[in-house]
Length: 342
Ligand code: CP3
Image (cartoon, rainbow, N blue to C red):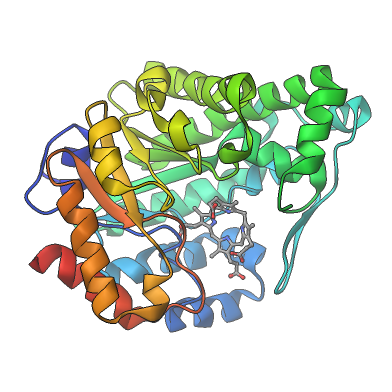
């Protein structure tokens, strides 16, 4: 096995950590904006395999990252399940809402998603043979809780209030929704692997708003179910879990779910992660994405600090969350040069 990212996922401590970046194909890149303009809108870009493949490859061509992440979105799964989905420019996603058992009943079954998602599988098949020999191809999906928060509220919310309310007022509907998303996600990710993904990442962006028993039931357990079934179907498949802002609940999460790598957000101290988490699994993270906007010596210092803190174990260098549209592409190069050059 020669690909650096796969070696880190297998538990190797490398002299230079492999690098990729959340949202590496995105609006901070002029070439992304040009392709997106050609597609017309974001969802058309996701569902046009030739163009989605093009933007997947753009950051690889520009920066030679060690990982290429499929260009798609976590909200394609709700749409494949029958939810309406659209994006309001400058605001974000909008979906039809699920407020009770009728909304749940109207959704499709876990095996009925593939016609809708076929263009995504086609994107994977186009990209896989185009990647440089040392670049690892990463597939992904949202974790059930995070996907459910959007399906219930119909949009992003600051505190995931509507999802918490349904979880408490109608646990049967809520639980059935989590189960459906869990099962659909297994089918979706399994198809991504068949189409060329070498690793999959599960994004639980809103895991931090679940506490205690609710975190275990709705963040940890569904992730564990997805990982164990994927590994049963695809022995040796590496999985990255990202229970963002889980805080203390990051401890033991990789072991409990079977994840090979734990992605940490930038609220976690890298040297704490080295002590408390890296003994269990590879760690991915966790430079604050704001440095991609501000650059300069603080970017260099912080990049070195993260590399230094996590150099004693398997590490994949990444940001603590997605790069933002106002980032400067030159700062990304500076980060990479700092990681690779010391
Ligand atoms: O990382 C990558 O480059 C791969 C593609 C990718 C996108 N979204 C493309 C995208 C991935 C892995 C995602 C994950 C995703 N999508 C998450 C989980 C990760 C996270 O950020 O916490 C979530 C919560 C979503 C849902 C979503 N998609 C929101 C809330 C938004 C609007 C906010 C925003 O950043 O604009 C999107 C849109 C989106 N997804 C864009 C991109 C490149 C911007 C769309 C555009 O071009 O206008």
